[in-house]
Image (cartoon, rainbow over all chains, first blue to last red; front, side, top):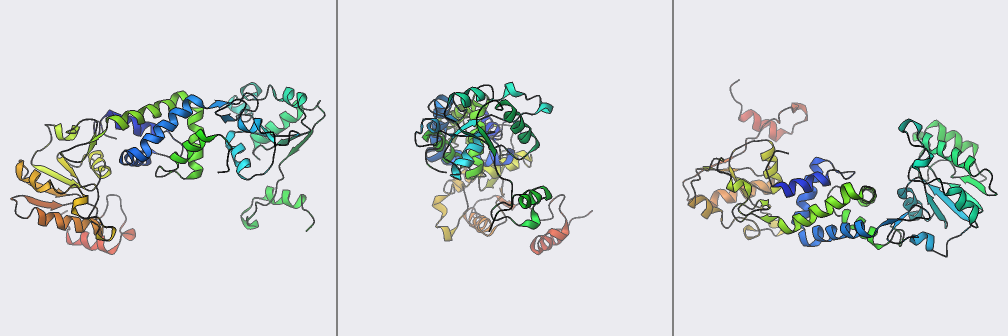
Length: 201
Length: 201
């Protein structure tokens, strides 16, 4: 953007908006103009909501989820099955499972995956207190809901060893054909896994 | 999004982010998580920048541009040619022309186009003071830099009649082949216009 078109305040707003995932320089300009047109309905409320989030949102010390209270709403929810613990990589994955109403359980958010190439080791993740958490509670099954990527699977193996000495069942999500998916578009690994894990019809 | 996953503060942030152009529900969730991860580097500064924009940014009473001062930086800029006035539909169009360094002139931002079907008439646009502005200044040429759409051209014709009685030259942007464009992908109207307006090589 050329210098001094619209004053430093708007420039700064555009630059910061452009750092959001999904927005580039052009869409950040569009977003800034949209915000300035909808000052009372959108710009003001969004500024306030960000301020509230900045001040109130904390990381749950029990599970690593983010919420305005610690322990988080999910950890406090007495209706959830206390025997199940779902290990996820990120809060986004936790939200995805919750949207799918996939399971009634508590979570453990790692905050990433082990990645030796990127220099991410066990201490960089929310892993240290996992054995203690599993040992101290009523947990009977740990479900490894990590991504089916190399790093995700590496992390899953590491956790399996970490919990080896504890009397819990360790499971992982099933591999298979996505619901609504077409075989022709699936990779060989998924097809082979789906064939291996075939079930009675 | 299912109820009570992550507390009302995060839900509200996501809902407001989803109202930005270019962000849907899914990318708004990603943006919210990104903001909460980068609390000090991004969430805080962006909340502040929005607050500043909300309080400081005003519409220029002379041209309809937005800036933190009134008259705006462009209207105050003495180095611009006072004989040229460029009429644009939106601030986004003004920014596009400024980025292209297309002209050294003052602007007049309409805030939209005439659109009888949508009930947008002359009074809904920044049109009323245009004849007065053109008559009172040193303006010798009014450049209609409106979009080459039906509504844009309707608006251009309306402005031409509005300024009919004033001793100014009224021009419009040239039609033609976009720089870098391929003839094979251009519509017939553009090709015919480019042929009619051909220039010596």
